[in-house]
Length: 204
Image 1: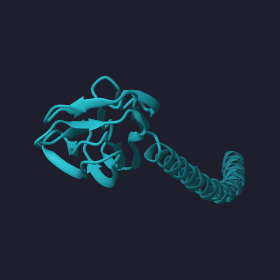
Image 2: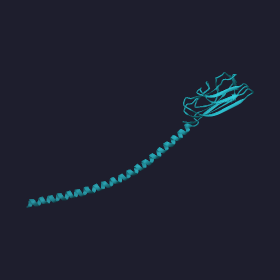
Image 3: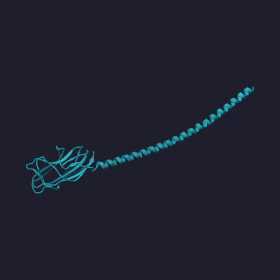
Image 4: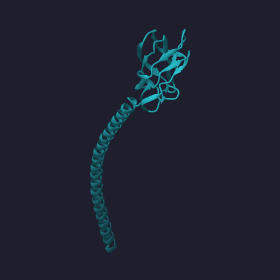
């Protein structure tokens, strides 16, 4: 009987210890659950703040890109050149405006009289002429095969004419002035009245 009593006592003691351990463990689990929930709430706040920060960063990147595009898309190419001396031109001869006053972007070649587009876009060109009394005929050409503008100067003393045109160019297109066919060679007076000028309006 003594052995049975001892055995029962041991069993009851073990059950009490197991119950105590389970109770304690259960409390720990609940605490862990609460901690995990708190961490999840904090994580959601962090993710929300991160998304807000990313949106602000993307907005700044877009604004920076727009500013960069605006600053490079306008006014990055411009030139002005004049004819420094009186000159007579044969038929279909290029007119070289040799005195360069402005060549921002280095797109104008003062040796050939050619402007070469360094980027595709919309451009504006102006050409002004002053002859020396002879009948003269000049044209502004694109790539040597497309006339963009024409100017006819009649016989007489110091006739002047000018043209301004906006045109779309592809990268590498060349714009220049040359004489056209006539009964007599064309001529121009070297002065600031004989001007070839152009600039980039907008990149495309």
